[in-house]
Length: 369
Image 1 (cartoon, rainbow, N blue to C red):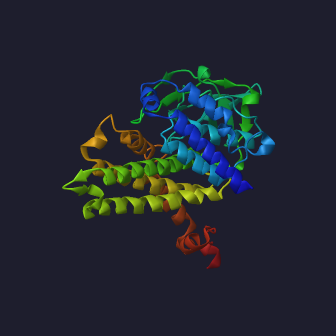
Image 2: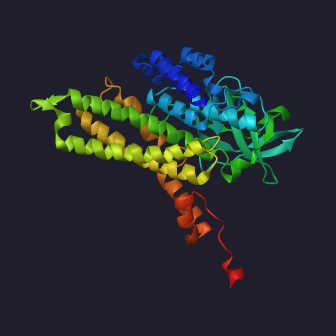
Image 3: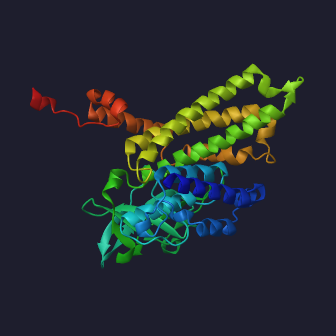
């Protein structure tokens, strides 16, 4: 029954994306137009609440289904914070909050950013700046992770109107990535919750990285579809260029990287919220980022000059891949984190990590001696 429900939801979402997302909509979104009819259709389908348990007022889909949903949205280059809203709703529900209204985003998702919450009249006063917040000034709600004076993590929700100085910008895919200053922003008690334990020291960073990993899989799949179709259609020297061994080799290399990245991203389906395990997120984000750069390059090579034109839709996918691989921690950042976690656990833990998926605590060698 669960598998049937998941298949129905994904099929419905696919039809919805096909109906609403086209070149004109994407071009208008690049110019700054908000696709309100598309968001209403997503809300009517219940997709923003996909990961929230039914008992909390959500749809209660399995993590694997939600991950596939995020990939399909990225496959069609949906210019909306659907993935961020799905995850934010689940995190806020876990903290005891009601479903969020409208679109939502996560902050901070930049490794260098840190917000501080000072208790005040039952609520908190925020301090700090968040950079590269996805759809920061366009989302209805911003879900924040901050730490209070004792080091406890708190989740807060706020509206763009409460934010003080701001700087709007866009990434290479023309998706809004805003700088939001929260110095002096006061939040009432109903907008503040103790953060669930699973957030740990990374706050929302790992969840942002998990989203980007799933999105890159969807974007790479789109690029591969375009490249394979073009290779079979474009005729040169009397035959389709897909018949040439050099082109076949390039596509095979790209497919291999795509398969490896997909396997790494699939591992996140083992966790309820997709971003619960930092090590799995680190592996997925770094591997997907590495593959995204290569797949985008190969697909542009196959298309030749045609792939760099505004007329061909390939750029909607590749520009997103180039942007997503650097957001929420680049490959080098997460690769360094992987090394740090493995070294902290000790070399004797590396084999159990590979075979059992667990990292036992490092033994106390001094006590043993």
